[in-house]
Image 1 (cartoon, rainbow over the protein chains, first blue to last red):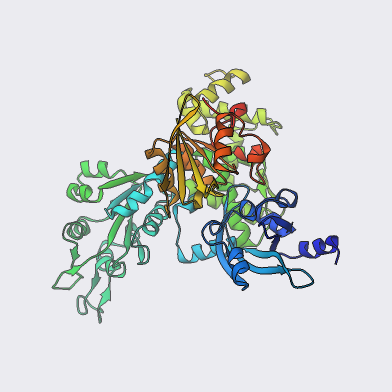
Image 2: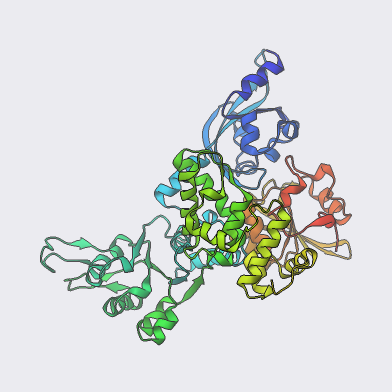
Length: 442
Length: 131
């Protein structure tokens, strides 16, 4: 078979395929391989396969090398690669020997499938999120990521503060999944979702006969989380009586189920979260100070989305990819106007609100690009009052001028605050203001 | 100035995220004065970024690197020069001579545009040698 024919066949396969010679240099590279790695055939051919595939096994346990040594093929080994865009992708690789017509070994063949979607769905089902699933390039978030492993290893009680929708539970899960407790349960409880009396029995369980209809023992969330982590969301909303019981768990590592007579030992890490300022609640005597000091061993503050606007384009991309999978659509992007509108919006509901906005757009968008008309009315009404009086700011320059003017207006002329909102350095803002001839009063 | 290079044998490791060893090179007035290797084993991404910061690294010369790890490293104030390939000695010499831009040191698929989101460093000094 001629080379051209071979290439046509290889390109029609949905799995990535490449072959190497005995020096590990790539001799052929199909179209699916180009798509998965992000590297073109022209660039890949002649290069060492490890420079192209960039897998976690390349330097520690190369599967192709194993096949070449043993002569045995390897099937569907799960590995991670970093593609040309710097994104981590999960793939499954299979290897085999590459022989000529006389049966002489002339190299190896590697085929691989993109498993990112399967991996993502598995994560969503099992909730096994890590910090790698938290999309952020903001410095505040990067600083939090940097201390995350130490926080996870420490086993201390953690208080996560942040507005609703900033990803407190995702962060708590990431801490759990980095800790030595990761193989044990992660139990999340929203304390404000349950009435006071129910919350107590829900957290600590009850004994048969504790109250009417308590016919048999029921384990509480602390019992279910034994050996793992319990995440108490909206901790600022719990009543005084539950605060006392929680204090005991933190002090003595024991609790008593409702109607129980003997204490039960709790080997559970407690992560709490709130969207309120607990310090203020302590001052107002709504929250016990002794409990506050117990849970506030390590406090992590998640910034609201309006303080990390540089993450908005990344998050838009992430949600588009997620909803494409869930809704079986093929939307590629949003228009510049949509990005500008979302950058100008304050997101009181934070990331959750952005997620809902993109999902709203998915319902209405029938094409491949999300346009301004697909945005919900709450964002559009802001648009009408605040921006785009001239129907279409056609250029990037116009868009930049508009965004800078709006940021200055919102921050009442404070350039440091405006630069922060825009996610750019103060000196960049100064330079742009000078070059676009924008005054502070605008 | 301290330069960190993830290594595999005598070459630059393909991916910093998965590398097991890092070579640290101290440079003064354009000359190497000391070098050593440290093990980073199975460390997590934040731990890798944290370790570079703790060791006082100024520049990281590496092969491929995930956007996430790159953001963590640059957030620590470290300059990242990614998508570098080749023999360690040649790479180091090229860096010190301001010649790292040469095609032979670029991984396949590397385009200058890939710097977007992969580091703070911009402009003509990219891969440009000493400060």
